[in-house]
Image (cartoon, rainbow, N blue to C red; front, side, top):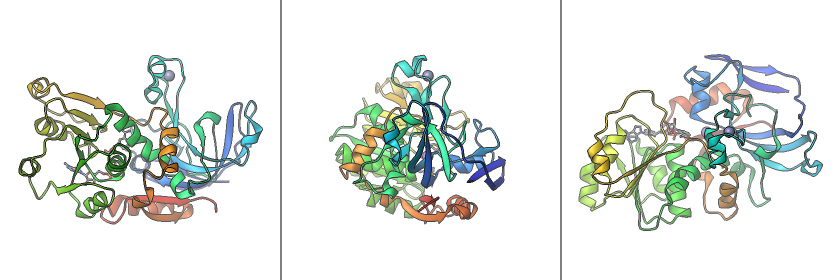
Amino acid sequence: MESVVIREPNKLVIEQRPLPLAANGEVRVKVKLAGICGSDSHIYRGHNPFARYPRVIGHEFYGIIDAVGEGVDPNRHGQRVSVDPVISCGKCYPCTVGKPNVCTSLVVLGVHRDGGFSEYVTVPAKNAHPIPDAVSDKHAVMVEPYTIAANVTGQVAPMENDVALVYGAGPMGLTTVQALKSVYKVQQVIVADRINERLAMAKACGADHIINNEQIDLAAFLNEQGLKPTLIVDAACHPSILQEAIGLASPAARIVLMGFSGEPCQIIQQGITGKELAIFSSRLNANKFPTVIGWLEKGLIDPDKLITHCFDYRQVVEAIELFETDRRKCCKVLLTFSA
Ligand code: NAI
Ligand code: MN
Ligand code: ZN
């Protein structure tokens, strides 16, 4: 089989590898489609502190079970599955409080262990979630990015009368906007970004207000519109955003952070306590695959609004370079591995 391997930072090769065997409790997935994410590019460029090389990248993937290991129901052979990249121990403190996504021995497929940019990949059987017939292949490969939005929104239980402000209209911001609008029916969703094309995508995803906060002052805009955000999601992840969000937030608002910046950010505590703000963070997903598969089955979310390109996996370098450089036209880029 062929796999997309990052041998070392900036060295991507398509490598011939032996077909892996499904071990005890595992299934082998014949990959059909995979999605390129910022973290794949970060591992390729050597900017992911968790990555070890050589590594088969890819944590957003969908395919068909073509072999089952010992202890796995043989009827699962042939099942269409999306794979949760989060592998956890089930026993540590975070695992026992429902946060396997921050397991003390967390393994993420495509980061700590070989991932899905491969013709075949073996994964724990419980990570391979069955996809109902009503959900298309292209939607199935998008489950993982929406699980991030499910995790973010799951932290804060959005309500219809929330005024939500989302920073960033990249894939993470857009999936969050769709969840807020279509799943939680939040009446007012504002999206701020620097790129007008991305703001147009946010509008198409249901945003009620879009604002280019490089050209227009966000605080002044909110003031003018009489909007006081009660729920703020930082899906842009610049260290300066938290303090700005604290300033813009309504009393009793919730703020969710998703960034991994190593840079310090300066915040004034009075702004938080004075309004009794709640600040949450969200990493990966905690058992959200069934939730998102349910959203897709009910037609609540529309991944087509994010998918802008699709390449054969042999064109993976071109695909990643396009993803990295053309942020105006490019959002989610898919790779096909088999028909
Ligand atoms: P992206 O880079 O495609 O999107 C970020 C967007 O934010 C861009 O459109 C950019 O123009 C915009 N932006 C940058 N600075 C801004 C500012 N000051 N105000 C408003 N908009 C601004 O990235 P993607 O894939 O959407 O991911 C977003 C962030 O989420 C990344 O930092 C990524 O590391 C993080 N992330 C976190 C995850 C988690 O589980 N916590 C999972 C996936 C991504
Ligand atoms: Mn991803
Ligand atoms: Zn654990």
